[in-house]
Image 1 (tube, helix red, strand yellow):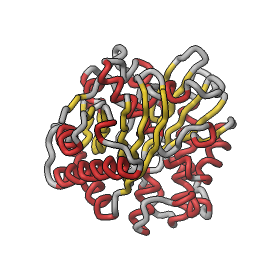
Image 2: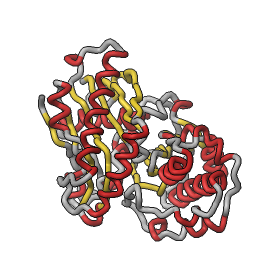
Image 3: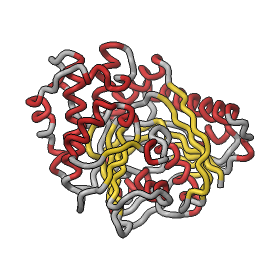
Image 4: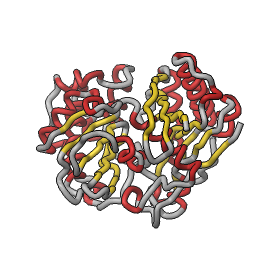
Length: 364
């Protein structure tokens, strides 16, 4: 099947689009990918919506700015798909299914609640193609964490690559998550802690820029190790997996008194430390760490990871994958798996009670 995957992650900087030809179990062909950025005004609305979502108890409620944000999410995803198809001279009729993750605004699995805004049925109507959406709800309803989801697909994505085992795939978006792939196919995954979210929030608030490009500002700063220690005292880090995080699950206030460069350096060091702490929870030391997401574009953060992990660390691009499109590719495959009734989550990835399928299909 020819599937498009769409991903707007916890950094909410834009929409990634990727085409994959797959049966849900193997990759037949990676197609092109594309990025559609949110503008500053859209990011501001999304930030307000995420703040307002903290008080929600009904996953279907859209009070205040959440309704506006949902309209922005749908419009951006429609334009992202249409721009992608036009740029690559692909007819809509050639696409069998679209995997639409939506925008997470609240993730509290301990309360049985995960909320992704985005109207999958409306997107199916406007694009005229089947859309699979609401990927996380079934897992959470069954007692799982509902996250991370992409780890189910990481073994599929790396299946035909000559990479050592055990292998760790580390996605550094707004939140970090790791996938451990053992020699015998053992699969373990969990959120490691904040990745770019706290850094992005600080630089956006102070400069209006969405992120620290290339980690340049962080590279000029000094790490405050005492602040890192305070941040690492969070009880999340002693919990054993399965476990997952809300984007706003951590408080960066200990860095507020630091100048921007020092704050970014300190938060990058915090991310590296949190990944290293997560590595201690893995059953064996990975032979290789493959990094995807925005963190793969941050040499400062990558350098800190290499120092903390004392292991070989490379990027998805360097092994023949796409650091930028990996999550979108995963949701393309997840959409096909949903159509086929294949598992999207496992006990080792989300704590689901059994391998579980999920997702909701909307037809045009």
